[in-house]
Length: 392
Image (cartoon, rainbow, N blue to C red; front, side, top):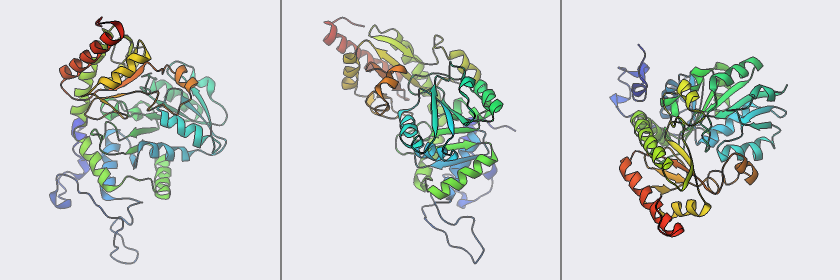
C-alpha cells in the first residue's frame, strides 16, 4: 500500500516493527569516527564515518524515499553536493545550465568547473529551445525550477525528453519546492539536488546538501566520490535534518498559505512594480507548475519602485529578518544584489532581472496577519519619508 508523503517524513516502512536501537523513537546520533571489527574479515557493516554512519544512512534512506529515488547521498552543504556532482564530468565536457541560478552555483561553475575544463551554455531553459544548444560533447542539462531568485518554471517532462533523445543527464535542483510539492525523478530527471539547509532542515540551524538518483550507475559514482572526497554529512547534522523533515509537510503547507496572502497583498502596493510568485495565475509558469507539482511553494520575489525604497525596507523590518538563506520557519527577506548573487557579474544579474530594486522573501509560518501588519507599517513609513506622507 502506497504511503502518503506526510507519513514518509516520519516513518521508514522497512524499519517498522524491527525494535532496533532499543526502541528509540528519535533515531540515535552515532557520534563516532570509527567502528571496532569483531575479527579479521568481519564487520558490523560500518568501518569509518567518512564512508558511512548509521545516522547519515538513515537520513539518506528517508530522503531517497521522499524523492522516490533508489539512493540519496547527504553532504556537508548544498554547495558540497553540487561540487561533488560536477566530478561526474571531465575536461572537454559541456553542460547546458539555466541562466538564472543561485549565485553560489554560478560562482562554482565559472570559477572552478570552467578552470577544470568544463564548458557551459547559460540559457533560459523555461523559454528557449534547449535542444538547439546540444553539442557533441554535451553531457547534461542543469536547472532549478522554480529558479532562484526570478522564479522561472521549466517544464521538467519536456527537458527530460530532450535529455533522453541526446543521451544526457537531466539534473534538477528541487530546493524551493522540496519532495513535498515536487518529485523531479518521477517527471524524468536523473538526479535531484537539494540544499538541505533550507526547507528539509527548516529551522536555520544546520547546513546540509543532497544528491538523489534512481540510476544505479550514478549512485555508484556518487558513493565512490563521497568516500574519496570526504564531503559526507556529520552525524549530529544528519540528526538535525531528520528532525526537521518530520514537520516538512505542516511547514510547507503553512508557509505556502502565508505566501499566497503576502503575494496578493504586495500586488496591491503602489510602490511594488512586480510580484513574481508562481502561485499567482498571472505568473507565466503557473500552468506548467500545476502540471508537474502539487503546490507553489513559499518563495516570493518582488520589485520596488526604487533602490531607496528597497534599502529602506531592509533597514526597517524587525520581526521579518533581513538575512541570507531561506526555507526556515522564520520569514526572511534577502537582497540578492549584495547577498545571494553578489559574486554574479552585474551584466548577468541585470540580464536575469535582478536589480537594486529586487527583494526576495522566504515566507515562514508566523501568523500571516502579523506579517502583513509589519510590511504595511514599513511601507507606510517609507512612503511618508520618500513621498511626503502618501500611503501605498
